[in-house]
Each structure stands twice: as C-alpha cells, then as structure tokens.
Image (cartoon, rainbow, N blue to C red):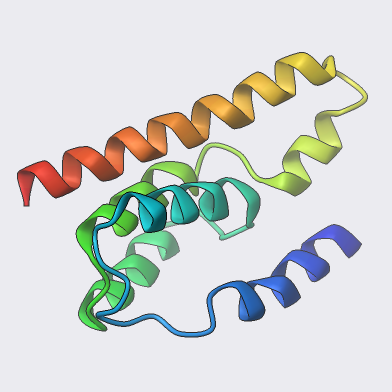
Length: 113
C-alpha cells in the first residue's frame, strides 16, 4: 500500500502537465511505456478514459499507445507482491518485455495515425 502511495505522489512530479508539447518522439514513447509499467491505474476501462483525456489535451498518439499497452499487464506493486513467488530474473524479464511491447505499440500508433 505504501508503494502505491509513493508512486501516485511521484506521478505528479514526473508528469506535471499533459499537452501538445508531448509529441511523438521516441523519448516520450519510452517515458510513457516505463510509466505505464510502473504506475497503478485501475483497469476496468478507466485507462481508456484517461488516455482519451490526454489525447484531447494534445498529447501525441505514440505516448498514448505506449501507455495503453503497458498499463494493464503489470505494475510495480504487482511485481513487489510477486517477488516472493518468482525469481527476480523472471520479474525483470516481464517488466522489460512490457516496456518493449509498449514502445513497439507506440511506434505502431505513430505509423498508423
């Protein structure tokens, strides 16, 4: 629970504003892929509304696609809870794989839109 609280507090400092300055650069795609893997966002359809709001504020489709791909699969608190059940290498692989697929998803979004 403390980890979730700290991540939510850090989110305000890491992404203070969303707007047109967040374009489709690779840096932003990677940043949002990592953020989507780290942060807890309830996944009962809320992530779509959050990303839609970010797009309406002018954020690029690349970071939005990366975030959409990385929010549901895993988060830092879920990895922490699984740390006693799975080896660190497995959890590290899962985290890196989610980020890589998020970056690929962001790239596909840029290519298609």
